Length: 179
Image (cartoon, rainbow, N blue to C red):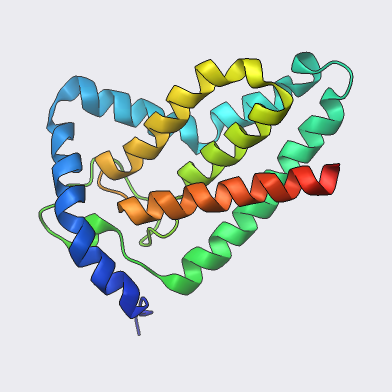
C-alpha cells in the first residue's frame, strides 16, 4: 500500500502546479536547462564538501572547528530531512501532473522538502556568519540551486520554501550550540 500524503499537500499541489508547469517549461531552452542542471549537480554535494574542506584555509584560526561544525550540521540536517520526507510522502510534481516534465533523474519519489535548497540555505547562513566576504559568490549559486529544483520539475515552490526554512533553522541551531 502506497503511503498517503497529508490532505494539505493535495490542495497545495493544485494551487502550485500551474506555476511549476510554467517554470519547468522554460527548461526547453537548452542554455537554461544546462544552467539548471549544473546548479542541481553543484547542490548535490560537491560544493558543500569543498566548502567544509576549505574551512581551515578560509579561517586559519578556527577552521578545523568550523569544518567539524559544518559537517555535523549537514549530517543532522540530512537525518531530519529524511525523517520528514519519508513521513510526509508528497509526490514530485512530474509524478502527480503529466504536464510537468522531469528534466533530471529524481533520487526518490517524494519532493517535500527540497534537500538541495535546505543544504544551500544552511551553508549560506553559516557562511554569512563565518565568512561573509564569500556571500557575493555564494548567494547567486544558492538562488540557482533553489530555482533549479522547480525548473527541472522535481519540486513545488513550497518544497523549496520549506527546505530553505529548515536549512536556515538548522544553521541557526548550529550557531547557537557552537557559541
